[in-house]
Length: 196
Image (cartoon, rainbow, N blue to C red; front, side, top):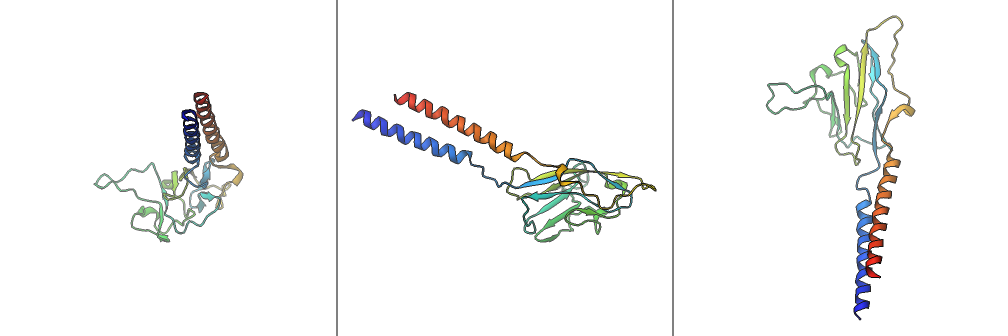
């Protein structure tokens, strides 16, 4: 009787451990990725430019907040709240102008298109979607502004999608799965060894 109780308790323990491992190894976040560009985007002074940033697989972001900022800009010293200002802020299905950097008013669109590029536009841009169901909610894109010359032409430059940056999600999932399977096998081996 004691052996039978011990065996059923062990079987219950193994089942519980297996279920816990399965649920703890299941990703809680979605498989969405925010994709930017690995290449520096180059624009000539005065041109219009689109900075690439999109979600894969493609989803409708009109119900989400999309923040475009310049992470290297510091808040104004007189602002006690140290608020971030945005190059473009899309919230509640519309552009939010209250927190927009004055120099970008009437010069940006959601995707982000910057019209009449100036030297002050050069730098890092961050695309961030706070409520995206993903571990990767932001992407950094670098914009370089060059003087306009006779040979310079940069019509709405968008990099080749094959060259866009993204995290190797498949590799990450394989690694998580391998770790979970290894942990499961170790626990199962320990339980079987303890029972017998």
